Image 1 (cartoon, protein in one colour):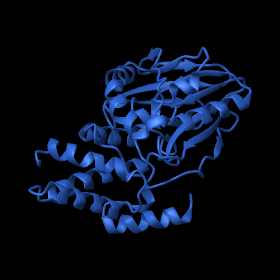
Image 2 (image 1 turned 120 degrees about the horizontal axis):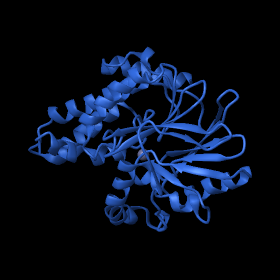
Image 3 (image 1 turned 90 degrees about the vertical axis):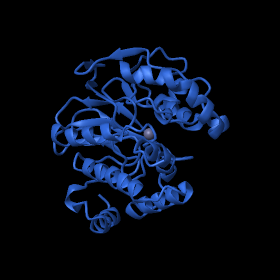
Length: 308
Ligand SMILES: [Zn+2]
């Protein structure tokens, strides 16, 4: 844990009144590789531009599994190059959820390889359902960096399934359902310490995307996971550094404060109200990290709450 992050969290916690500093733990250093004792080695691969998003390389004795694929052409090709450089075969790609910053790079990641892309059915179905809309929306935003060779899960797994890729690479599937996105899932690496590939169920001190408008589901999942996961589990999240389950309370507080700020505005002037919500959330979490995702979420949530 870095001391400046701890201090920021503590200060924010006091200001927000809803965060006990002791409940929050960030782990690791940027892009650090972690070993799991005698088990697989986990490397966080971070797309740096135009915004941070993680994929993970899980390296076993004689093969690799990758979790998620990042968004851009540049990043997904760099991820593939990093995999090729290990000299170990890619056994599978696991997809946590169907947002484009996690699945759009799958085509580059797996090009020319005969490897399964694995998800729960709900994640595959949402990716297929929404890809045309994402293509229209995001293709314009990212231009040449938006992969045209997108592929989708080829193999569906179910809640509780055990996925054994050999060489110590064994994962258990948790089908979460709607939470941060329309359908989320977890993959838990089997072994002594609990390593959880958690997708975007928590954003490690970055502003979240809430425009799927599923926050009421998300907070229920956050509450449940805080008690279900091992207290010292490592959550490898989609944006930012690894966290522990205690951090899920920070994520819940963020959502609660966002909704309170939405309700506190006078929506007769929507632009002014939106700006006030954005300023309020930047006060809670200083900095611009993924703030555009939070800002995209303001109006849809205001409509859901009957404010607009
Ligand atoms: Zn994401």
